Amino acid sequence: MRAAIAGQCFGCLGQQAFQNGLMLLYLKGLAFSDVAIVVCLALPYLVMSLLSPVTAYWSDRLGRKRLVIVGAVFQAAGFLVCTLLGALPGAAGRAGVVAGVAAWGVSSAITGGAWFSLLSGVAPPGVRGRFFGKLRFSWQLTGVVFTALAAPFLAQDTPVLALQCLLGAVTLSMFVRPVIFTAIPDLERPEPLADGFIRSMLGLARIDSYASFVAYAFLLALFTAGCPALFGLVEKRFLGLGDNTVLWLGNVFMIGSMIGYFAGGKVVDRWGTKPVFLICHFTFAATLIAYVLRGFAPGPVVWTIGTIRFVFGLVMAASSVAISTEMLAICPAKGLSLSTSVCNTMYVAGSSLSGLMSGWALKLGFLQKQWTLMGAPLSEYNAILLVYGVMVGLLVVTLGLAPSVIGKAEWYPRP
Image (cartoon, rainbow, N blue to C red):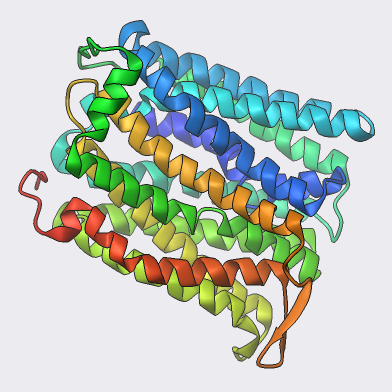
């Protein structure tokens, strides 16, 4: 468990670059359009959602630990490509960055396909909530420290070279991760599925409690995961905040996530996933609507945005701990790599489509560039956030798809 936590602390900065605004600033510096930025930030999650089940199916045959390590090596390589090829002029540089982002997504699918299955033998059932909380708290703390150290190097409009230096530091840390992962033992002997890939997938779809939970995870991600990127676009494009301020607001989001991971893990192990799902679902809707109505809050708008980002990060982290814990409890033991990967893939697919829907809406141009709500000026990004907030509120009926929300789950392990 310590090796898993340490490895993720070294490798987390790559994923967090897509969440804390660093990659957004890099793409903006390379003259990506707003639509291209949203789509590019969602691209790796789309690739992961398509490939993770396939890599998971083969991981029980090829070795879960082996695929986790190989994927971690290529993740670092993809980030290196993204960092270096951005130095090429014009369209060539942008194409190189997109290729690096796509390569990072492919390698993430290789690692993610076997990751949760490998951890199922490492983390005892009675402490899984706390383990996932500690794991994510640790790598989120790492990201917060890195962002705090990186912020002084950013200005109102940071040169691309400075951003490449920061991404270079991220890349170096990612190359350390596979070395640490060699210390994680594969304590279970997985039983490969006898059926082919398609028949195995159809078999999972026929398990009612599993299929309904996967649907809930997908819908929740669909209307929440793309919001941090929209936050960044509002703050940079509409409010005109400096790069350093945008990154600091991303850091506030990560601090909220850090606390959410820590507290969420304890709540899940003590009271189960039900209270976490209920609280997070309603808080998602409230924070998204509050972000749109930020102009009516007293005091500086940056403080209001920071508070909303903090709360949003907290509930997003707590809900992810609950989803991961319940996923391991509800997935069938036979073909565990595939079942956990499909569940995680649907969450990632929802995350990817969340960003792609935003990009599609911006590309079509049917949203007003600027509009007002009760006299307060707003942007097209706010319109998308308002729709997401309303949809999360309306989708409260999907809470019934999560088994532990329906009633007490007798199979759920208690310490």
